[in-house]
Image (cartoon, rainbow over all chains, first blue to last red; front, side, top):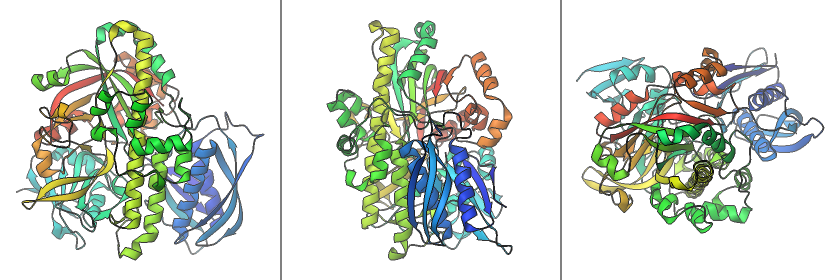
Length: 138
Length: 485
């Protein structure tokens, strides 16, 4: 079930993400954003792993996902690194404590200015799957 | 009065260039919505959710007169791109969604005293030197790495800091909107994260639709004003399009998150999370405005340092006999400002939100430099690679109708994904070269995202604001060399 897909958008990038659990949704959204930041591993220094701890509290699970991605985007710019992996310490509808792992990269593909709340709405369907659209301001 | 309808939204025709969605359309509208476009251009506006977003803007607490949409409109976040709204000072809403993530994204025009024919033999070398001197792309540091204390000086004083550092002249400053410094800026309202993102980014272009372009003037529409501005046919000029980089993006992200939490405290309910806002006079509103002003100062300084780097490139390639590059003007197109307008016969202080819209003050306006008192403020409208850009000046219509605002560019009409599918980057490079446009970029693969076919017809966009009396066409520029991230 863990999947993401780039959808058309007039000016920016719209990403549809889905996972079998909230953890999977966060992980696949992170993976999707990482691919937008740097599609290939070219220029990546794999021996130099960077880990960062993120702690986020938000009003609901949609805001939590967007705030989580925004925080990781900030870390990417600060560290000039791409974060692709996540280990959760705690995750519920309003709180996320996790460690993200990534590698330094020599330049990014796209300048993601921000992760927006536009169209974001995390839905938990009858099968227990979680999905949402995420729009990135490029 | 004739009318058209898009889905369930009624548009009443006010003139050939103006349409109105009446306040009766939706119960939560506080004012009508007005759209500047020809009937033909409405078709492209109908393709996305620009109009729905514009109607949402009319619900902002404290909004005055009307929510406005410029002809280069497309869907944005909260506000549509090309959106203008003014709220009552001091208790009306301030909404980061009405300014955008790239605070003070804007355009600067530099003029030379050299014709394009004189520059042509050196064009390839000049474009290469510009590419070397102006770091571009994402995650690339600039030549000026500042300490946090130095950065605070930039955030506080904007281009005045660059003058002190010998990177700008006082004359440059007179040719920048607001003199390149908003006095309400407070570096304490900018987060550590934002400062960390910005401290090595001064003098960098970034990526996406940002560029440095070498153009030639190929058409003059108003000889008198063009002469007063020092513009002439075949003149070589430079356009810079960039903003506040990661620092501004972070200021906006931080503010949006804080405002969403604070809104219930002020009883603010809005139809879109990205419209989040608080009363301007509230603590959160003031902190955001101070941070936004600081980011705006950073953006003006960024374009100033790029100017400095371009002057070095120009001198290095063209030598000392071809003068230097002078700033004609520098405009912000993502910003909020406190300005005065006559509303219902009374001068009223307002908070103007311009999201993808350019200030367009006419001749005689007290807030523009003495240098432009007779001409009106230059309004710079960049097009896309391979088409054209325009220099206009602000006109009286802008003061009467649009809170002193005009359009800001051509406006996208095609998604990045579709634009990339239409053509390969190397094919576009070749086509542009055949048209006499030299492109310097490391991002050939993603170049087509910014191809001319992904944008609206800039000529039609500019004709709307000209015919509506918001801004007057003065000169047209054609790209000769484009440097992109």
